[in-house]
Length: 175
Length: 175
DNA sequence: CGCGAGCTGGTCATTTCGATCAGCTCACCG
DNA sequence: CGGTGAGCTGATCGAAATGACCAGCTCGCG
Image (cartoon, rainbow over all chains, first blue to last red; front, side):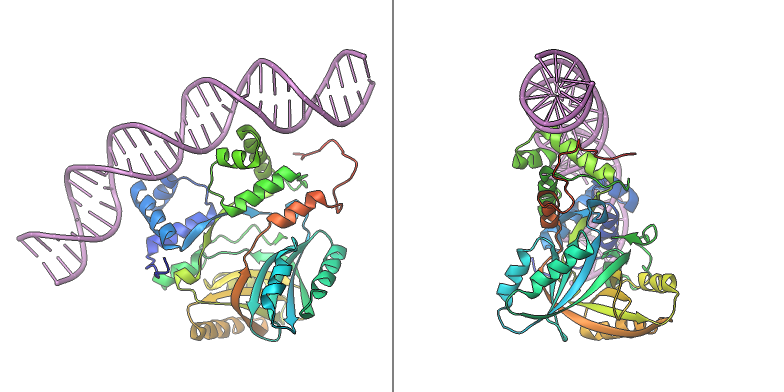
């Protein structure tokens, strides 16, 4: 499963389509790709078995859920107990994503909160975690280009301009 | 559709389950939640119609696809043509996500590349975009906590935050 | 030339979906 | 106190999607 799968153009187009709407039926995908239903089915199975396609996740509109404030906090650590700190962070619901990074800070943490006031409290709570020495937080104002992978996977096989595959969202969605 | 939807605990548990695997059938979800299939179906429809649940996206393992290097680039801009710069970025397949931020830099860009060398070229290409004055890039080494939303939505209902304690007749949404 | 891999168009049984219905509980309100 | 409406339930139904097959075709390659 850690075998690097050879992605051809059909695979990447399939993934790009899924990125647009992962709920559409296999028959629809086949129609859009101009191939047979069986082909799409076998491709999907291969992608899933190879581990490249790990599954599907819901796309949640945070603003619609009342999460009006999003922020990225870069944390500097002064202890080596990285795992413990991760545990602490994972226990906080408002922590949506954590990356370990190089550079001045050691962690990049994605935060969601209802209000600025709550975000402030949240940051205080995070900085109070033992081992966290400093935090550098920047507010995320808008999300002009939501997460996408299709174009990148397209280049893996075809190095020509797949540039604008994922349609630019209806102007910058507020988060 | 931009009316804030009142999420109750069942909704958030449903979303949490979907986040674990968005492909499971409605009957399975109903079983796991301990409610009837009809209930799950109506909840899903409401969540989708309200715009909170915007759809589903495939979960791609970047490493499995040969994208071994991930990085965050904070871009400082010196011109006001934000839209043009966004367009430029969107045309680059390796640009996976863009946030407009407050703080010293103006954009936070998530990048994916096959190798460090390619990342370097990519950054040079980005800094060469007219209007981009400076770039501050940090490598993402690992991803200890992948993106998640379930826990945060769970608190939205339990917490005081904006859940009125007086049980108003739930005005689920307006049209 | 012969082989294997991949795509095709077809069929088939099973599962799932979406919609609908009556009945029940419960909170709220006049 | 009794009416009202919303939400959940269990049930049914037809339509759709799924996963699994299969034989036939083409194409690249040794």
